[in-house]
Image 1 (cartoon, rainbow, N blue to C red):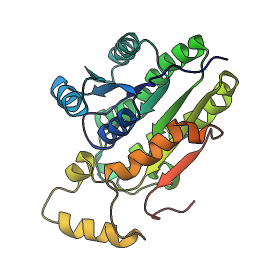
Image 2 (image 1 turned 180 degrees about the vertical axis):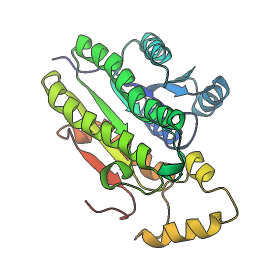
Image 3 (image 1 turned 135 degrees about the vertical axis):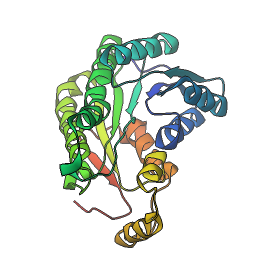
Image 4 (image 1 turned 45 degrees about the horizontal axis):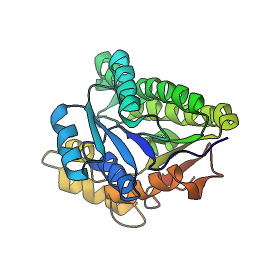
Length: 252
């Protein structure tokens, strides 16, 4: 089996800000060419402007299966193939389960589960055809491992991605393709900020931090380092694993 080309070719979803942007920056620091996928063109262009000429900005709603496939195919064309896929895009609201409506569930499941299934299938077909192996890292959540009040359907979606990760790790090993997941705890991202808005936000953040043994929420770079480790050569003998990066909040 031949070696992947240099520079590495990577696709990162949800790369307009937060964890995805931090992952793209770290990958590019190693010389990788990165397709930066974001929901809207402005975010993709802004991220690419920060990252430099080796970044390929692409935008669209990954929750729509046809759009998702088109974006993945565009990324493959721009990069000339793919060696790494980071499924990072995600979305949720912290709300009581009994107050939620089916359209909210549909959106959470489409963004956090179905989009990962669609993008992964397109990329895996390309990786298998290349015959040079590859790595996929899914950014999940410890909510998908241990549950989380106020995020029941999100936890269910991330639990589904964890099961997908382990199943594909077994199925793809014969092609030298590794599939792993990173499960962040609370991280200083736009989603956290949106869910912590309101008059009692400071008290809620304080309660959250007091539950974390390291006594702080993660920064995007804290998570990006773990993602890039699993995507890189140092993790060449690791597949089918879920690595928590939660400051000790969950120890399972």
